[in-house]
Length: 79
Image (tube, rainbow, N blue to C red; front, side, top):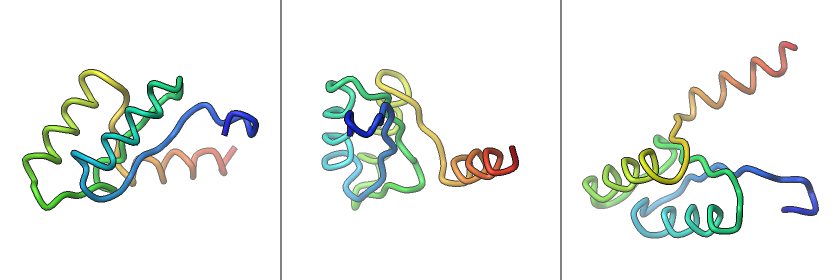
């Protein structure tokens, strides 16, 4: 990723509180800017999902929605 000039990562997936959280932290510890796509993640345990989203928002990176990402990308196309 670094060789390709990637500096930031978007995270989605299942088991927010385990798989997504672990991957996000790994990216953070490797120096990437990390963003959790809240509605792009899910869990069998809604409380685990919510807790992870709150933890990321307060401590690690940005939390956004897929709609916000799409809106941003469309704004880039309009330039």
